[in-house]
Length: 448
Image (tube, rainbow, N blue to C red; front, side, top):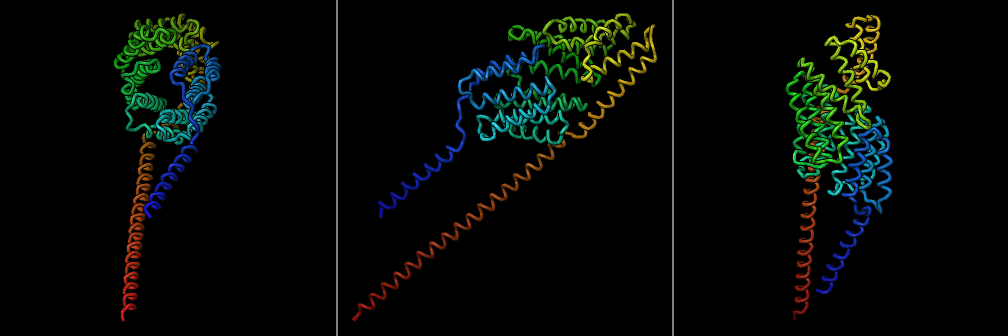
């Protein structure tokens, strides 16, 4: 009898091990990732992406992936994330950006809940949300942002902080586009707090961008002194980057030009025309160079032309406006609107002014501005803070419902176990009673 019980226990242990092996074998085989290798090449691809030859970035990252022997899931995840962001920000091809975000989600779905790929999952949520937002599917976008934020809540590791910073940066951009500049500033500061102790290239780029964006928000709020403070911080970070990140010289110089152009706006608000002109000229000189951010140089020339109109230096203003006119991107509303408004101001105030031309430019400006403002109003009505609060309540209700079901299951299981114990106990007692009666019957039969 003792040997039988031991055999049964042995078989149970073996069966459990077999089941565990079968369950484990159902998961996809995981090849090792090449984290350091891809981190290095992704960083270089981002530099190409931010340069004049940005279309080569896709070919470069594809060649990197092809040259890896047996790439892992994390390797392909980085490629999909890079492509989603490229089509989102460089090509404005939002459908294709969403397609790569979906590919990333499909790739990671078998690994949901694995700590190894949790950050990549958040990365996929951000990519999906950003693509949906650009397509004006605001409610759906906020749901994906919420999923990413909820997955990272309570985490304080270096990598989680990096992804939370990226998510908060996306939400800050949403607030900025909606004209909620104070909310944007709060989000930008949350990002800074998350990456304050990070010194890698990606964090360096993000830090200077966050400080610059905070400065722009203060300019929008007509607080030029606060704006200048943050622009100076951004410039200090960039100047320090010459030594810390010498391989990023082109990016650093272009970024310095951008920040100087933005700081010039703040000095123009203060009516310090001399300092504003100096900053605009320096910005233009930097980004007019080959392989630099030439679009920003063109945009800053229009701002400098506006300053010349205020200063009644009309000949210089006319020269700059005519210089940039052939290259204006008519599909980029801010640039087109800035040029039309400045050109109208020239025709209104210059000695050779023409009110008919001024009116025509203003009419075109108003048409584009009305279209842009309609988009802002629609976006502003979809407040992500309200949406997050609603989603949080729904999430908590579902969690409570799951807990209630689990409690009901536990109570039912306990009751069932109680019934089984009672049944087994009753069976044993009955068996003993019957056995006792049988013994008594035999004894009675043996009596003379």
